[in-house]
Length: 217
Length: 208
Image 1: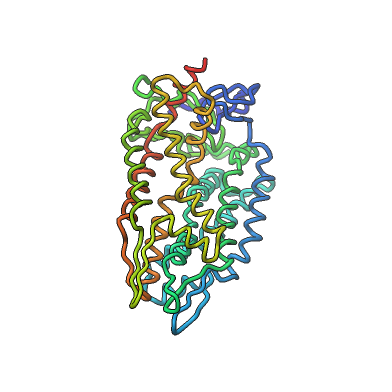
Image 2: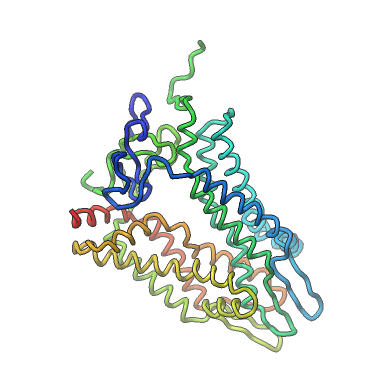
């Protein structure tokens, strides 16, 4: 890989990267000459879209965690589980690995995504000492983990369809799972809408120090 | 560069917008951005034109998973057996039609249409007949829309759900489950390892 002597960005050079086919186009275009996607220097109104999806997900997050996601009825008992109580049940039954997976996918990932994306939006306004590289990594992880939160939705789907044994045992889903689906989808949309390149635009600092340690001035 | 005609020599980092020149990559090499460190380009081992057998395999596996029973459940006095679409129809009739529709779209419709799009592109492009605007539309979708396919997430979800009900009843995986698991693996490999970018050059040549 050869980088330039100084770091010139596509924006500075009057060029645009096509998000779809990764070819470079002159900034006069508004449609990529190779693949025909709509292109622009930066994603249009990316902060607005990200914040809109983020607020949606925060609003939905409350019912998703307070309302029960499913109800189990058997001859002897009848119980409604929220996401958190489902995890505690799994742990109590000794399925530690599964409980850990669900805990991570259903509790940590959604709240983590909301916090990271909110923080990244804030970073466009306020500077702090965390390096842009770290922030970019955080964004990449946020984007990659997104869809794995859907595990819990598919768990409820499978259980509801399978366990229909009349009076013996039956499982029904509750509105909480819909709200949770909404959280997952809207955080995924928020991550897709965020344009990380704006973080780098805002900085004039050179974070790239290849092999020369900084000289004391 | 001849080996990897698909690799653009000059590109910009999608995460920090740095202009970079990427040399030809070996099969397992990855090019990282020198400024922000994100992966710019994976030397993808499979070319699009060799993906046809995988696509056909994925089709057969998906078809099998829809046809054969997916899961079966036995409890004293009763037994239930479902297929994948049976699963979804049951959920929509019992309580949550929206949940059923969303899952149906993510688990079956989306991967299936993606496969159909890839298949038609592979069949059309080598012969140079991909002039049709729909081919470009499909290839754009195949290049950017793959993260909504949740086949692998679904399989993990099903496995988790079974450990939850082993206390209530005896549950067994049907042939359909194994078909779908196979499909999830083949499909994920297909999307991750195949370089569909080279198809652009086919489409743009036939257009100009």
